[in-house]
Image (cartoon, rainbow, N blue to C red; front, top):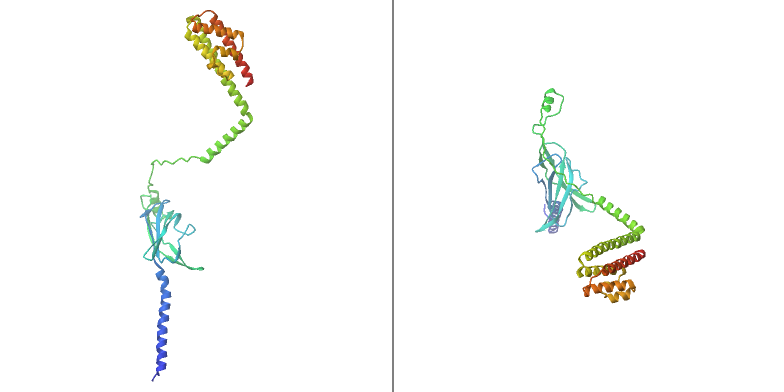
Length: 321
């Protein structure tokens, strides 16, 4: 059988077309395999105890352009229970990306070897995902019971063995931290502030006036006691030093009552501010005793006049408070 040149040329084109389409289709099939290079999952701890946390690391090496999803708290981690997940940023080197996460799990099962394999989801399109699994890994369960665990059945022999099991005792003191109840304390402080503000709004002026009167009475009582003590010393010692202290104390107390600078006034200026014949005679007797060194019986009468004047001014000013 012979072929024409035209037929031979058509046959060659068909063979080239078939080879080309086969290569294209094979690339599309192999593309998913090259998109994800490795899914690895393993326990980071050698053993686990009942109710305690064990760590499991899940990592994926893949092409940078694809999108992946890791399991979250809604996934079923049986025989383990999800506690916490820590994700790490994507690392890309030499056109290969690495995504990883560490899971904190706990278990309440007592099997000696507990296994787990977690998947990742590859988003291939808007409505299509592919689940890719890591290899199964296991962790050893560490029992707190010293002896072997026997199967529970109704035979007398095994029942006796179970009765003979020794439980591990642990009497070590474990300190539990105390937590300060901040919301409760803040609520109490706010309540106290509100009560104080209400009381101050209703009785604030009365409280201020009562405090001013208390201070006023206290200062006057201190003055009377000190002035009387100096007057008695003058009666026995008759020194100009005690007379000067008495007149200085009287001026200072009168200054606090009337709010005038009596401590800087001379006797003549005081008589101008407080015109009174008795006060003028008393001040003259005091000046005579201080500057003339003539201390007579009149000095005691002069001090009495000063004391009575201070008491009178105190009563007048107290009524104005």
